[in-house]
Image 1 (cartoon, rainbow, N blue to C red):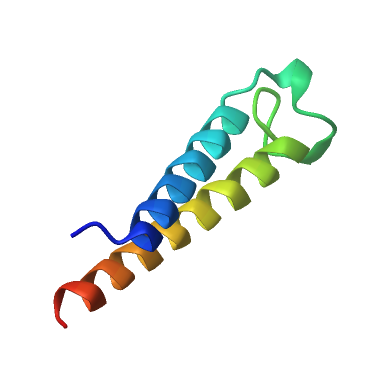
Image 2: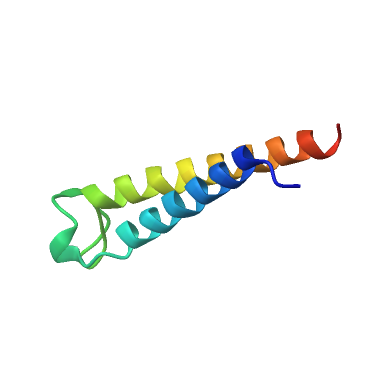
Length: 75
């Protein structure tokens, strides 16, 4: 099956998850202001939230690509 919509949505999902994971892996000096302090060595920063949203959007897009692929295969 070579439906261009499935391939495009899958590639989009992969890139969004990749950018989200790269955002989560940034060092503390580049992550922005502290949103919530857990203890002396752990905190949630601004770009942690952005990375989490990107990973969630990428996961939703990958799930949508899977649903689209499944719908195309059962026709």
